[in-house]
Image (cartoon, each protein chain N blue to C red):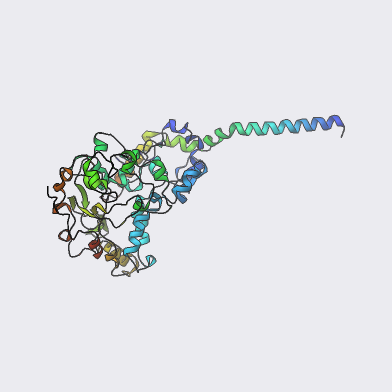
Length: 65
Length: 380
């Protein structure tokens, strides 16, 4: 390998490393929120969730206390 | 209706610091649209495991002490149950199962104060999953401390409200700080043995110094004689009979009921739990809701479930502990019926716990709490 090619390879590798590092860091938050996108879609539908809640409340055992 | 706010999550929570973590990173489950598949292996309360669960990842300092705090360990109830059932082995009874089903409902996790109603109040989210830095006392503290403290503090049980509530508009954490609640000292101790519990003297340092007070009655009683509430509490609420029983009206429909009769009293007794933070010779005493057959329901269930009723006399060591115990009464007022004058208390046999207050079925340990001779009237 010529020294020119070596330099180009090293530079490419360094740039790729930087891109990976900062690229991932920037998307961690997005990934975490995104990792629960389906959960959020359902559970923030409050009307639907409250209908489940009312159903659960009316069917639970009553214990005085 | 309680229970409605059980599953719904506010959109602004999703954008909050905790919301950004993502549901499945705490609750597990799978991020798919199918409900059953999504909820597979889900954890309802990810904060419970080991006294902190996932919260420990960011709140390590708090969690490191909370796991040995009395709200997590329920050390007091555990000790009492262990003592009165000796020498039976827990594993020979349904006590461990009953503990999980009933007693343990009052055990607190991070989430059961800061996110959801406690289990004993049937759970449900406090405010659409928004985290509450200070737990709302009406929903969280009162869920477990509701039968006596909450009612007497607000004046709902036949006596005046506590002055700290009525005039001070104080909430539980104004006295019982987060540091105390998260950190029982020494670790794994119980209520009166905790050296960091709330003390009246913390806010009233001068009033309480016997011999150096501007108040003659304070000077008349040497340090360590009377708990503050002995002079400054109003009548308070007790539960007189057994704690848990069964209502079996129909086969297959058994209800656990709490049939204690209400009992409003004011009784001064001897303090047998003298500790650095509870140093008084005399305290107000409250009746503990227990009888010798309080756990009879477990014998019934054990017979039904296992074919063998287990120990016939489950509370075999009933005499070991009293059913009148030092109480932290929350009906405090500056002026009370017993501090009107010296002889409103001295010579007033109604306000002292004596043998006439006991019943034949009471445990022998109650004898240690009663006055055999009440203070004589003061002659002018």
